[in-house]
Length: 473
Image (cartoon, rainbow, N blue to C red; front, top):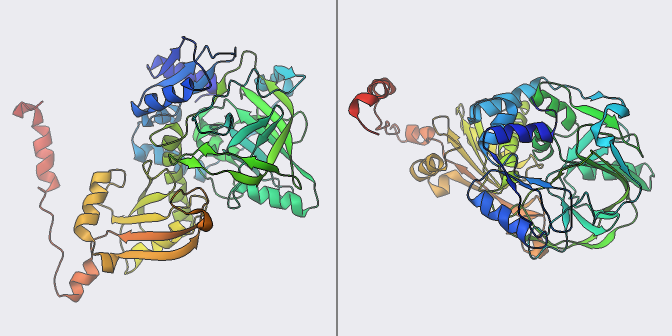
């Protein structure tokens, strides 16, 4: 259990999974390239301690591997163990507890003047074609439903557009957009917003995972942690912010005023995201932070990368919970693949119990618009959905295209898919592949599907017990 980013960094260092870069690096071109190469090599978390023009160090990659993710949860780095932690968090969420402001490290320093181009914000230009410095890549944007009090914490891109203003990409299907509409419909001119940077690993996990609507991320993070998340009231609003965060920005979003252009930015799928016209933005009124804070961000772009790992694992568990809550029987495992940009492609294994079971699963996945998965592969329970080799084998040996492939044309979906041409932005064709054993079709043919050629499991167990005797290394 880790209370903050710092304690988790210490644990990573003790395991040899964190590395401090002590030479000076240039935020204009160098940091992004170092991160790209480090993620290509599945390297450690990085601490950039000397950034040209800044005193504040920056942390990247604390959840960059499955081993790091599992370390935070206190379990083995196996997907069933991680999924069990998420399942327990949904079954037993733990409410956040509010602490005295004097006990909140995030309020140790209160800046009199807001300047997002200066310390403690060593924000790099992550990609050469980015429109500007992107402050928000691994953080929590906090808003509240004005009627129910439901708190949302999500990760949304926040380009610095002025010394006290940041953009806020808010697609209509995202939870922050629900809040924007609620505040606007109540006649308000602005919506309070807080941005938390430098978070404990549990808040990072939930902020990128698409927790279901009207479920507080604080509660699920507490469930993952096994203890309440400590929160404190903001300085300029009644929003509750993480007490142990490194940096807190407080402000408001105008609801009747928009920034002419925001972006482009190198997005999670590996391509440059488009310019957003008339974009929502946030005016920052107050900054508080810990003494000698860390700035935290991460490199987006082509997978693999930290947010892809964190989103892929978290969203797989969230999608599994969605299928469970939907009453869909027989779902055994879910993988929202990292290679599928942790949101565009999913594989689901089931214990098939009725004709059309696989297509029912596809429909439920497509209907979960937080993730906008456009490609769904459904396999039998004997297939490990986390093993792309096994999924490909199922497709190759159990699928006939005309029989098992489903295409739904012109479906409303996410807006960040680069395969969509500009005139069709927000619209995709859905593809579903039923890669389960076609038993019902064999029965109609008065036949049975061929038996597996692998040795029986009891024979394999005997071989494993004698493995050392064979002398095979």
